[in-house]
Length: 446
Image 1 (cartoon, rainbow, N blue to C red):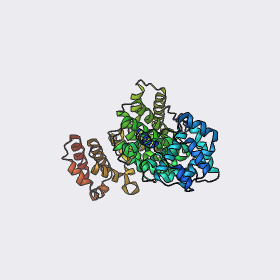
Image 2 (image 1 turned 60 degrees about the horizontal axis):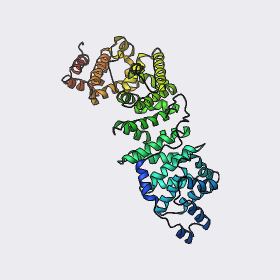
Image 3 (image 1 turned 90 degrees about the vertical axis):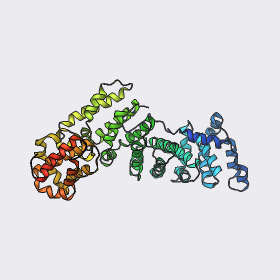
Image 4 (image 1 turned 45 degrees about the vertical axis):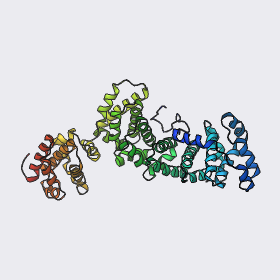
């Protein structure tokens, strides 16, 4: 699959990517089971005409199915959706869904047989399939999600209400303890996100992005799952609004850098770099400073010396290098410092070590009711990283040297006490910087 990060059209992505061994096994176990279609006809639940159409395709696959379905075309799309609307027995619903999937398998163009129903009823063909997502049966929601994915991907104008309900379902599945359900849900998301109009729908679905991030942060996914989840973020970042908010809301840039640094598979690095390029292209003001704070330029320089099987990755790396080098000339030191502070990943970058920086920018920490000073205090209290503690203590000391009037405030929010505690920290650098900060807090000189 080729990544094209300079366009928000992704023609290389097939219409349906959902392929799940667990779902295939369930399908195989249900396929041969007989359904009493004649009984439904005798009970007047289906007509004689419907019965004849069903019997013509029942248990047929491959070319045998194609010969019947393609001759009748729209008839079968309408027939199968209407059956889902009329019939309620779980085993029958299972069989209808298997028939629909067989009809669409390797023939995404047949989605048009179903989508044409929308001309007469805007709720179709989606409503009965969305109802299937709410079934308590194990198979029905999984199979319905696969079919919905194909229909949404094939639609010239996807139904955003249907996409929203499908995304709510996938969000619940992403939190499942069943790895097969998680795998299928991720495949559904990455497939449907190929449609530009639904990306903002996913972004606004409650807990949807959080569920994806949880997989990366907590579940220690294998390289394939890493790739698929980051692929979802790559698709999302074609949207400028999402690209502008993603790192601010979820602190994604540092996390993706760490994943890329430790990645075993080239494709994981490729999709991560493509995501960075989107962030830099679509929303540079929101993201370039954050990239600078995690030393993205140095990382890209290291990557550019490696040999890659895919030339596109080198193109994206070189783009990022050029963008970062150019923007470094316009970024103020404080912007870089701010991005680093907000990320919570403090390092000994130049602003922390520069008296000139503190002389110029110390007042920024007082603004908005000491918002940035409170951030430093929070890092001192919550971080267990020795470098973060050392840098935060040093910054407190630098600030107090220039604003002794804030000592009382710092004592009230617990900074002075925390600095005293850190003076006995096992790490020598933490102790050193805490001692220096304490001198400033009690009125001496460092």
